[in-house]
View (tube, rainbow, N blue to C red):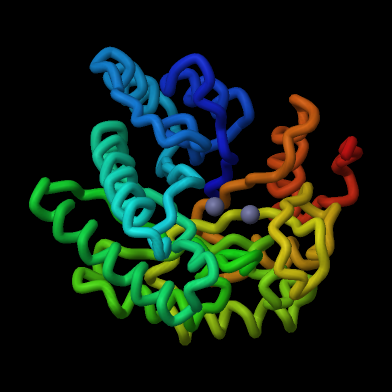
Length: 295
Ligand SMILES: [Zn+2]
Ligand SMILES: [Zn+2]
């Protein structure tokens, strides 16, 4: 199985590999810059080489890069819209530099009051500008659209919306899907029991195609089904619960995909506890695991 979590790049991108190995990850997700500023990051040659080298010497593969939260490809403001497109292209270039098989995950965007239809069209246009530019530059990064919780005016909270975005893109082979369990549950897809998981994954397959699914963000939800609130929780400690995760991680549609945890990090042992818990769910030994989280 492929399991890892979102790893900090504090002190340099190359430090992330060491941290991931220590946690027993064989896949991981990182930001390639400070995710909450617009400031671009120029990667130093030495930093890139050392990152690629440590990655090659580890068993961590694939690596996913998550886009900065400021990027909004649905923004009705032209200034923010084009700033977002440029920032996204910057993310793609960094992903290409850093990774042999680059994947870049993005929340599709928020229409901020301009309406869902407007927002979806805006995202499609942005994707096409980005895909054209990235083809010109010869970039090989695959864009993964992530399902959202649908909080505020965020789009991509139904498989139907994600499907429209994918279908609107002229070069569909460069676009895939990242499935976040907390977001899906908060958006109204029940993942807390076997029937709910089956129904959701069938819907995902019919709507988006399983072959498009490249990674699962494995997070429990702090808020109930359909709450449209995006707050992640430790595995088994939220409303999805252990029963749901047991079905999810062993499901034939998901079990061979990379699982990335983005669970809370209140204590430095939290990631390790969550990772070990997920591993134990797969081995079916859940009762032996100590998951006394502080939260
Ligand atoms: Zn995300
Ligand atoms: Zn989330």
